[in-house]
Image 1: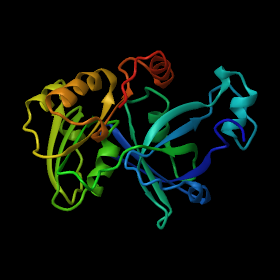
Image 2: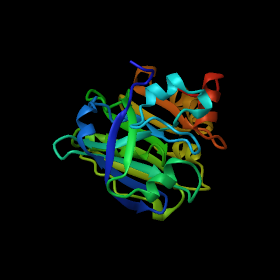
Image 3: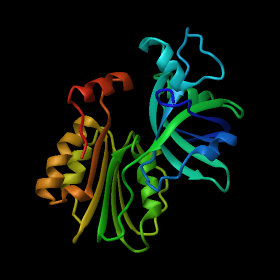
Length: 263
């Protein structure tokens, strides 16, 4: 098989603005049947966008393009978390962080109309709320919010959940559905997410933590969670989703050079 495979070919069913900086696109079509529900709440997919000025064989096969074209002509890849996947309803939702005309995926999401095509690879994933812990802590920004929202929905009834989410301001807050006992702290910029976590009371007992977001913030939190809060390695999912000032190509290159955060 060509590197990466041809990709799953989905079509836009509808699109809606959730907040000033979050656009939800709901996808479906026959290609959805080939996407596995892997059970993780941080399911991520690689979205493939045609690079302007490059002519591809149609229908676009992502793996074949990577094998036959020089790297600077490969389809543009962007990584996003699956907000929800419902094979019964035939729908997958992806929430895009948008900042006007900046970037590739955000402007695509803002312009998406029913019938538009989106090709993706995956999903991957590594985290889901454990059933054998006393409490969950979830920390992140807009990029991690879909995974946090999905994880909140999966927590067992009554279990304590402490969530810290960094967004631009009150207009970017959304409702999180959670059968557990949710303690939600919205952190509005320029307030520090790190400071908010450090100042907060910590749940008692065996705690599982999901901590994903901007790389420098994740680095600042990793030692705090491991050394000061005592979260064991096997119960800590921490990763930098992005780095301030870099697009995804630059971020991935930085990770390969050892600048990423993962645990």
